[in-house]
Length: 167
Image (cartoon, rainbow, N blue to C red; front, side, top):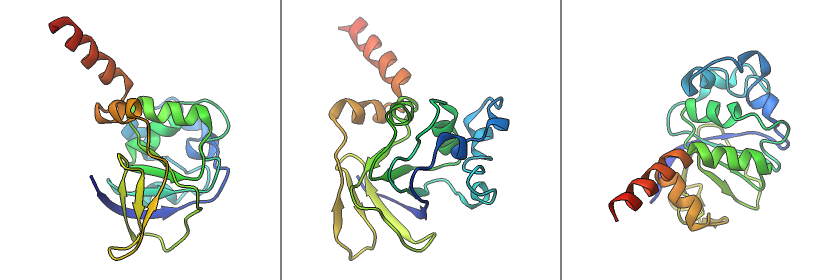
């Protein structure tokens, strides 16, 4: 299923300290974290985001520490998906565990901020213009698609446990 959002572009090797700086780690909710997301890279970032926006990043997005606050802040800011050529492994797992979709697209994407972008996480596809070509990324494995469909790992596990009890 296609989702349309506004595109935001950010460079390579964006670490978790830039995504969610240390002074905000005591905040409790995703929404509170979202008000400070990426402020370690540029203090203006949090005010730019609207629900449904898509972040297109360079390689190695989410490197650095294993803090779960980084993907939680992105989710709290309303980011619908992060697209990058590669992600740090622990960031990738943390994002999937909380239900934040990530899409691996081998080519680094650049463009104008706020331009429309369409994504289909299920199919691993991105389209940059309504009449533009479909860019094929890596389609997430079925288990990851199932976890994302449930909104994260905990909801997925609860649903599986409930289904097992009624079977």
